[in-house]
Length: 414
Ligand code: HEC
Ligand code: HEC
Ligand code: HEC
Ligand code: HEC
Image 1 (tube, rainbow, N blue to C red):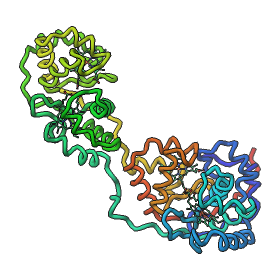
Image 2: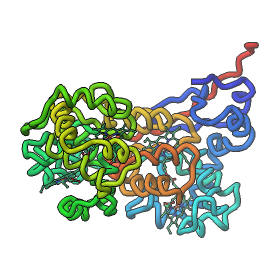
Image 3: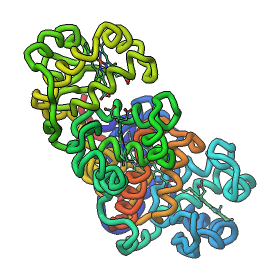
Image 4: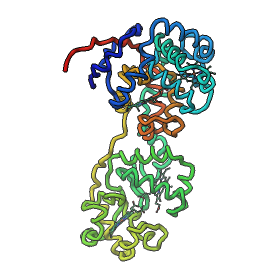
């Protein structure tokens, strides 16, 4: 929260928007906008928030003539892909209309709708829509459960892998690697290496050929989050000799075999797979610049001892950045978009009760860059498909509250 300057509150000299519910005292949250934007807004951008009742009445005439057939007579859309406008924040609406008019928000139905209207008309129509009661929240859908849990998506996608790699990624079949607790980046790279043919194993290549990027991420996150354990497979070989030989490996694979950087954890790994991997690096069928040297100088007998030593080590618990839950995400979004998507800053769009498929489409547009926004591009980049669906469903189901902006008397404080 940053208190507005006196300079700003003196601009709030016209009418109030009289709507129900949330009262925002015009000590606006400065939010993500810079002080500069606020200063500029004070003279220009905020006009739509302080429209007079007469302006609003004129705005209604514009809306009836040019907008209602798509956005509904009261700003509540019945059409797929067309957003509700009722109760949306006035300044935000005006800025978006300007963006459509200038082409900054892509070309489409809205370009034609905004193109022939004067800025004065845009301000008034924005003020009219902002003055309306917002839509009711959408009922919860069966399609999107309240929270899509990425690890359950990963578990489902990994069901075809369990037969060989174990239900939770701990191998009980000699020759099959354990995957539990491995770094998710390593797992993604390994799966992609099979997919791309850089890592040659006919069976694994066939098994992962059909996996898409989202599945691969979900699977990797699922295995990475499983509690690791030693493979339930035999590990013949001399552990003590292996321990001595492992001195050449600790720099990359860690003192306790937990892995560092791009070098995967080896602790608890299946011994037969381990030996096969060393041989593959040695004969070049598995190419890796870092493993080439260590493998070249390791004979089969030493590899067996190393495998026995590493198999005997208890793998450490993964240090994972845990995947964000619905609550984690919405807490971040609400910082700018207001409690449950009820923005209290007239520049910031409300999300509550907006149409889910519109929100979903917009989040994807931010992510792909078709709709540009300094604040939203970076934010949306890290969202998975599941996150997008979950967030759209969440906000569509929130109760929307209109906002009353209350003028603060200018205080004569230094
Ligand atoms: C032919 C149908 C159509 C007409 C007419 C139309 N709109 Fe739209 N409007 C849309 C669609 C579709 C979108 C979503 C476009 C997108 O994804 O950018 C939209 C989006 C908007 C948005 C962006 C909302 C947001 O939350 O970002 C605003 C504001 C808007 N319209 C206002 C108006 C106004 C004001 C008028 C009348 C002057 C109008 N529209 C006329 C179809 C229409
Ligand atoms: C029929 C048995 C089988 C099934 C089913 C199977 N795998 Fe494998 N997987 C293997 C074998 C064998 C290897 C070792 C291949 C090699 O030497 O490169 C392996 C290796 C891997 C590796 C590399 C591990 C490492 O430490 O580098 C990953 C990752 C992997 N599998 C993921 C999967 C996923 C994901 C699925 C399900 C889509 C799956 N596997 C299904 C047998 C299987
Ligand atoms: C310079 C760093 C470095 C050193 C030293 C090193 N490794 Fe590696 N090791 C790696 C990297 C990186 C990978 C992953 C390569 C890949 O993606 O195929 C790897 C992979 C492996 C794998 C395959 C693991 C799996 O799950 O598929 C084995 C086994 C292995 N190393 C054993 C050893 C042994 C034994 C030594 C010591 C003799 C050793 N490494 C030394 C960096 C190193
Ligand atoms: C740093 C502040 C900030 C955060 C955090 C933020 N947003 Fe936004 N968001 C904005 C701004 C600013 C806009 C308006 C962008 C524009 O001008 O086109 C916006 C626009 C949107 C829109 C378009 C609304 C419409 O009616 O078209 C959606 C949807 C949205 N944000 C969703 C989210 C979600 C979901 C999150 C959390 C993952 C989030 N935002 C986090 C600042 C933020």
